[in-house]
Image 1 (cartoon, one colour):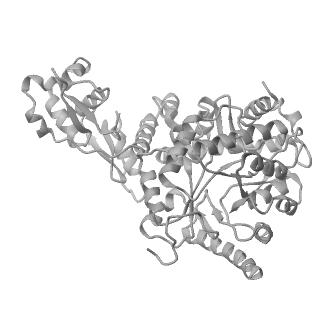
Image 2: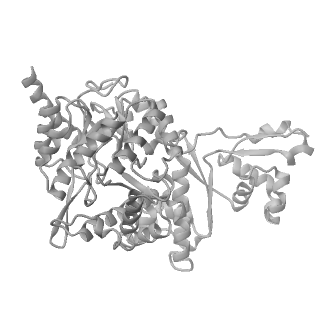
Image 3: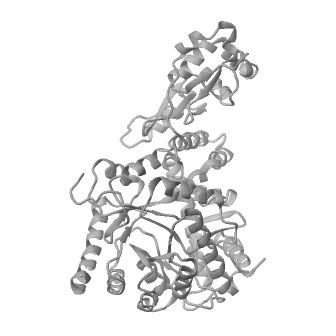
Length: 256
Length: 288
């Protein structure tokens, strides 16, 4: 390891809040002690992390409050150091951290809110796609319908929760006044880009499960085994609901 | 188009511009306020199919645009991130910015990123390393970049040259130009105890392609004060005075008002840009 590598490693440890002792002999003291100077970089590291998470998950920040969110961001930074110079996807593990911390508590739904907020952010990074009209399937021979492979819109993100996820999110948008009954049941949301905006539509559980299953690129026959019985029973309706939510952009039929 | 807004083609004009930030993007798209030119953070537009890159392309049609990177980590000992550089190259090819700039700093080691602009030791080893990487970036992009001096809150005992010597030599060896951040010079002069005018006087008059101006914050740590480059306030009078000295030395130079946190209305940024214009105009008259 050369001198520059050693110095950068010592800085990284110190700025992340680990032992600063190896770095201190390398720093000029002058009027302000080196430990104080290191503290500026520690603060910056935490603030950069907090801002990145807050930009991605503003509703989570509202729900827990500023002090708690700062603490969460600090915990996240320790557990998931950034691995890129681009912070675009920095928060992708944030829902799992929230699940681990709040599962079973009154904030049980926080992880799902974070998933929805990250889905919104993700959708805006993807291209827009057309919507499949299921009438186009009329030309497919009935005995080949199971072989059809549906392509989902690249921006489609499906987020589900046993809580009223979208209602909670909407209640925390500027100007919203409605309150949410947390016991009002599960909500499943299809998120996708439409123009320069994100569209969010509630879908039913069957459409949600079918959409998740089709996400791997398999045909209806190929995903059949992973579908619960109650979804199999309503498959045409689930497919229609998924299509109406803009979740399907086109289909292909492999040669038999 | 609103009167006073230059078209998007060509280089960055030697006038004052402002930073383009997300909350202001719709205003620039729809109302086209009369800014001289705009500067965008490259990484915010890396998703080629996303809405941000498409919006930037539309804005580019109306305004001269500079791309300013914050994440390439030029001074890191980690290998240069080829994926990051590829995304930057694709964005540069698409947007055709008037200027491309990055920072004379590092931000990652052993694959862990702090996403901060961290200072290098001013040593021969660090100089050779960062200058080589600046060359590699320019080779990949097929164009010159500008390299910006950063704010710092500590100094390394191992440094064998001044910050300005390091900056000038890095630019000279790599063939890069200099993006001189006058606020960062002022912040560092207070944090490390040097005369900021000495810094300005040490920079050759021919290498400065852009100047940055921004606000900073005085943070207290027990009985100590450290100036932190927070980009959340008006440019202070001391920095305006230093900018005056810079323009006196370098002449009219593309000048950017940077503001990233606690973002004010665009009009506040435009008023700061107008003040920079006044400074440049003063030296136009003297040169005439």
